[in-house]
Image (cartoon, rainbow, N blue to C red):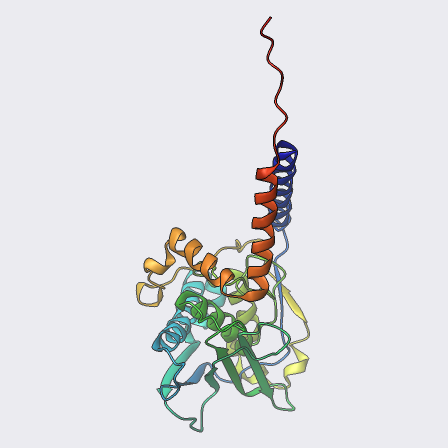
Length: 302
């Protein structure tokens, strides 16, 4: 009985592994695309106001540091892409300038703020970007709201905070959700992921939105030239992550050690009653199976 159960368990694990691998292999595709939201910025120096919450008991400075590194990482990506592909050299003029304050001020393009818990009661939505456009399809301003905890009350790791901030800034720049599961702008995110990079697909999409800078007189009307709903990465540009400067890299700590992460994950699972009950049921099942007497093969003493 125990041997049959063991075989079934191995089969389940193998099948789940195959499903996971198929999901990854299925993404080895020729077409990488990302939708455009249909709105553009009419200037290339975007001023971001990062409003901290130092007066709140749940506040942790790691969220501010992660967001500032995310801004720097986007600037790194613009510069690298412009250097690598001369057709998009105009992206070297694109820059996000960050200002840190303890209150909301006027005159900025992107406003970043934090809340303690996710932004939706029905989903673990830890980041939300909203664009406020004009009638002419240019962007007046954008807001980014970031959560510091999950809906279970667990604090986000610093690397998760940086990854989520990177994603939301992509939306504020005008990108939608890409079609590749491994991409920064993919629709879902798994907590506990490693540090993400901005892809050539992401920056190519932004290059499309800022192509008007080649001849600023062609900006208006926006709808005359921004007719494509999404962009596909050209074949001459390989899909890859763009490098990050040392100052904008997330520096790994003891908490990022795989063994430590497993222990933390086990702790987080056990402190949540709905998960703990399931774990207890499995432990009871294993205990019952272990207590079932095995049928021994008779020994021939002939």
